[in-house]
Image (tube, rainbow, N blue to C red):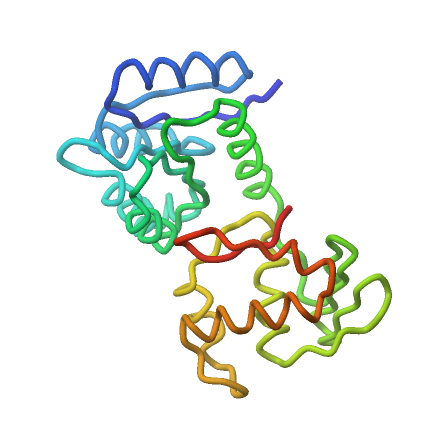
Length: 229
């Protein structure tokens, strides 16, 4: 059974109790807050393993709470999963850029929510592989030190920018990266002018070069891209 402590930040009583009940049923230790101010105080009192954060909170909204956590050295690496209503794509983008780890839209499936929480908790506990260690995923092998990529053992010729883009996604499979985050990561590229539109072009090129495995480079509509877990 899971033993991690999850802080649920939700102002609607019914949803907060639903989440508390089902998370406790899964074995998590659950604390709850009904406002952003309560959430900040709860984290000051006891640091949780993850925060499930509703964006539509009274007075201090979820984005402000997320920003406060990420600006504090003690809570900067605290995993955050956002709860959002459909149609809040702009807020999702801002939240991810602030450092949130994932999001779930309302109305949500409890099975999907639990799977997302488990994935974020699992990633938060695993250190990223050393830059000299090969990354293997979906028959794709990426060698950061040698700057080489193989698909089913066959070498794939990538540009320097394509390699950096694939490396960025492969280091965090399942994580959604916004176009803005990708631009910031790749802005030192010399083989093309890095813009958000150029990121789309590079993704198309990568998919072609990876052949049938290019399908694992997923578009998250209105947000950005991820490499499927």
